[in-house]
Structure formats: structure tokens, C-alpha cells
Amino acid sequence: MKGQGSAASAIEHHSFQGQPCIRLALPWGDTVIVALHGAQVLSWQSGGRERLYLSPKALFDSRSAIRGGIPVCFPQFNARGSLPKHGFARTLPWALVPRLVAGISPPGSDDGAQVCLQLCATHSTRALWPHAFEAVLTVSLQPGSLQVELKVDNTDVQPLQFTGALHTYLAVDDIAGARLEGLQGQRCWNAVTDQTGLASGCIGFNGEFDRVYAAAPSALTLHDGPHCLQIAQSASFADTVVWNPGTGLCRRLGDMPPDGFVRMLCVEAAQVMTPVEVAAGQTWQGWQRLTVL
Image (cartoon, rainbow, N blue to C red; front, side):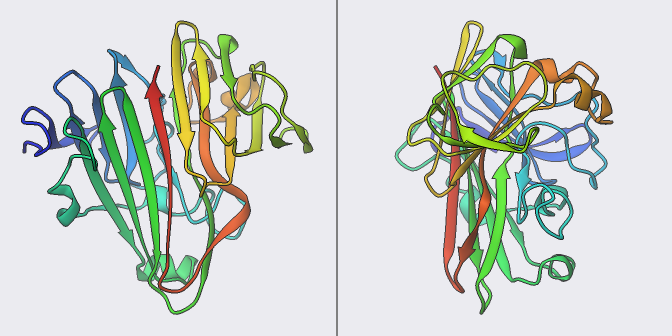
């Protein structure tokens, strides 16, 4: 069906690797594909280039986490708690939000497209995490820009706490030549060496890289040969995670090719070190915005 913001913008049901998806398309060629499984963005094409990394060995069995794109880690980051790794949101089916799908242009824009997906508490989620909640993921596509926003409503009578991330896998031509700018001076925990310190200068990559930074006050810039991408996040995400598995770890990941680390870099808007607390009846929102420079 056609979108309402621009006569040529479209939102349509789509199938990708056998998975039901929603595809947004703008008249100048920008597209995004979002799977209902995990509300996961699988592809973002802009400027004639795929901007996200999706592993060619990713699993599409409607049960497993999909390696690549933008997984939604909620309500737990990694294994920091008793839930399955990175929580349950990325492995459950989400539903389209009909009342929001109808108006698909982002606020203040007449040249974009937008889709919203929803995950609510069920008996299965309560067995893992005893809270009533409603999560809505909003994916907004504009020329040269993609924004992903997670909104969590606490529909319970007690407070809830969570950690999580928008676990964005960015495509790079060659990780050895990639540089990430904008985190200098920020507090940093190196998960590989279990050391803390302050980041200095542009970040380069040589081997396994897994660090949690205090979020910078301004947007980051990823330099990838002739390509540049601006990465911004809302202040409601306190941390930024930067990850590349390197040679050794990549070879041990069954859903990645041995050389997959060369073509990707995760830069994630995250809440890792301190859980978010949402009071009963209240809402939390956080977003990440990617812009082609």
C-alpha cells in the first residue's frame, strides 16, 4: 500500500529469507526492511549502498536471534542477569501497530516513511520477567537517514528495571581502515581486558574490540574509506557500545563467516552499566539516528 507523506513513498508487506517483513521505500531509492521477528531492521540502503551488515550465515528460523541488522536487546543487555542473552525481545514476534502505521511520514517531514511495531507482555514473558509492559519500536526512514526509537511503557502497578541496546551492525568496507570519532574523553570499560579508563583520539580496530563508553554529548562519525556516517543517540541511552569480534571470536560464531568481522562494526545506543527504572504507569523512550554524510 502507498504511504501518505509522499505519493511515491511506500510501505508494503515483504518476505525476506522466508520471514514476514515490512519494507519502506522512498522515491529516490532509500529503502529499509524490518522483520516482524524481533522487530529487527535487516537492511537499510541509502545512496546506492547497503549501510547495515547482515551475516550471510544468519539464522532465519523464527526462533533464533538474527545475526546482523539492528537487533533490539531488551529487557537485558548481554548476560547481565538471569534472562536469555540480550533478553527476549529479539526472538519474539512483534505486531504492526495499525493506528500508527496509517500515518507513515515522520513528524515534520513530507518526504519520509515510518512504521511502528509492538511487543506486549504475555504469559511467556512474565515467566521470564514478571512485569506488564508495552514496547513499541518506531523505524523512520528519510533521505540519507534512518532513526530507530524504542519506547517502553510500564503498564504494571510496580516499577520495572531493564538494560538493553539497539545493537546496530554497520557495514564497513574493511574494519582495518575504519575509524570512529567522537568518543574521546569519555569513560570506557574494556570488556576484553576488564580495564577502565578514558578514551583518547579516533578509535581504530585491530583484533577483538568490545568496549562500553559513557555516551558522548555529540554525535559520532564513522569514517570508512570514502564513506562517512554520523551516529547520534538520545540522552536517555547512557552508554555507547562498540564491538567487533576480531579473527578469533568470529571463527567461533556459528552464524558468522570466518572473515565476517572484516565487513562490520557494531556501534550501539545502549543502557548497560546502570539499569533504567520506569515507574508504574510511566514511559521511557530512547533512539539512535544514522545519517549519511
